[in-house]
Image (cartoon, rainbow, N blue to C red; front, side):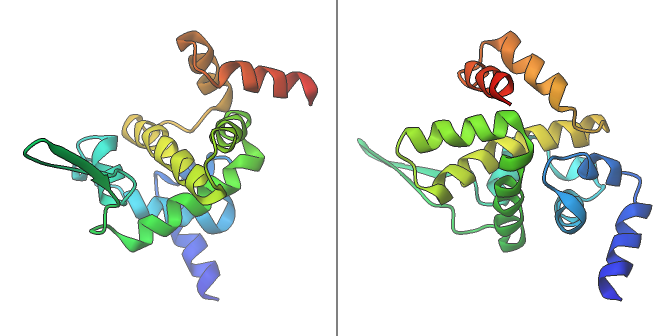
Length: 163
């Protein structure tokens, strides 16, 4: 009953199509991602602000000649849970996300660290779609990656050929 009411409310929202278009979001995570960003577009000035608020941007501190980077403790726990959960699901649905995740694993990152790195990247993409009020388009993003000479471009081309 409650799940149905949440789904109905989410589907009635004018921005729901954006979050529904995200690979791996599905019926459970698309409403959560919609709730994460909401509809007040002036709330965040940049994707970096969303990354900070959700706890994915690390904190860099300096004192004298020392500099250190650490985990961001002050963050929205709801977002800290929602973004990596969705990023984990996107690995099976998105060619570039799978290539990016595999690249992170090859570099020695553990599964959860690789998923968090992917979530960090996804936040920038979702923020742009949300700001521009456009649905996510995998083909458009793959074209942009290839055009920019992204390090994952050869990996997703190889994956596309093998599939």
